[in-house]
Amino acid sequence: MAKPMPTDARIFVAGHAGLVGGAVVRRLESAGYHNLLLARRSELDLRDQAAVNRWMEEHRPEYVFLVAGTVGGIMANSTRPAEFIYDNMMIHATLVHAAHLVGVTKLLYLGSSCIYPRNATQPITEEALLTGLLEPTNEPYAIAKIAGIKLCQAYKRQYGCDFISAMPTNLYGPGDNFDLTSSHVLPATIRKFDDARLAGRTEVEIWGTGSPMREFLHVDDLADACVYLMDHYDDDIHINVGTGQDLTIKDLAEMVRDIVHPSAELVFDTTKPDGTPRKVLDVSRLTAAGWKPSIALSDGIRQTYAWYLAQNPDAIRGAH
Image 1 (tube, rainbow, N blue to C red):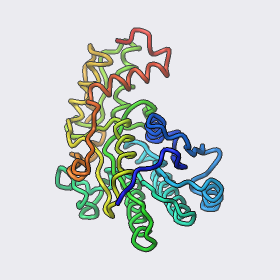
Image 2: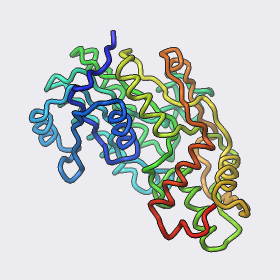
Image 3: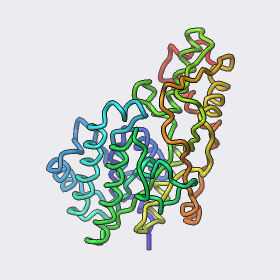
């Protein structure tokens, strides 16, 4: 039976400088957790087993949020497949093994919804894992994340470790990556419309046909779900985390346009790949566990755009 984390527990947030890790830290701090263990990449290479073992032995965390990883959109996945599979396989391998060695009370491993087959029945249930071929544009990353799920299951089954896995849908929010060569679709779309606004351009190019359907979850909702699952979930099977609602890329782009650059027109570059035709998670297991998201997509996009402007003072000029 899962038990809530004590507020004085030693909690390691692996990947705290990233989008998800930063949100998890904010959520923990807001809930009164004050003994957080953090290590930047320059201080600890999570791909180095010996270094991770030493760090874990020295700091002895009781709980671990394993949210570190190398991530990116279609472009990054297509051009850097070796980095994506190596980095992610090593990161979860070193931390899960070290957590076992030092007797961590509980570990939550964060995967990705890209683990599921390209043509999985929608909405996608947890049972769809390994029932079909993966989406080719992010296969190396997906394989690494699948290995992470199986690693946690194996350590749970062989050693009795309380290691659980959560699979979030597409994420966005403050702290996101807005670099057009490596970002995911939502921040990239915000950036494209804002660049067009600043340049006085009325046309904004959107990759693909605009027809694929995607689900988006605000990173603060994900962080809330992670803390909730750490306190309330201990099943062997991984659990989906999302909203259970999706929309087309065209509808998403129009929503961003209306917030960032209302006078712009969308131009679709159909020579670019669409990726998976549709991807929306079945979140009935999560709902049954007692958790639901609270941030509406339009509200989340406005908040994320405000954060983006605050990080880029030159972009504030003329912002709506």
